[in-house]
Length: 104
Image (cartoon, rainbow, N blue to C red):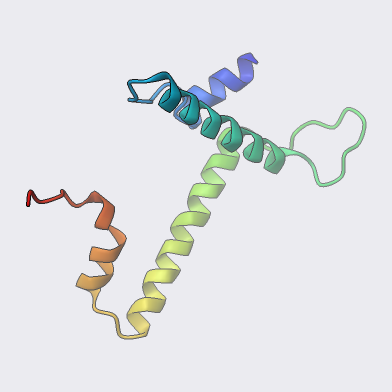
């Protein structure tokens, strides 16, 4: 449990929630538990043997997943530009969630 708590705080944002009600906090915690479980599976050796240790740490798995996501994003952007999409439109699509909402 202590290892989960340390990894959860260090790599998965367990202590970085900004919710105000118990239901939202519970959902955040569930997402952290799911992420931790999937990352833990990625750390295990391909074939279990008695006494075998994980082949990498949760931190290493997080860094590998982050790199894979960045690579996929770069390849997607390159593909869209090759298909003729304008860079401004591509950036607007990629960063749409970060744009402030204008008052109506």
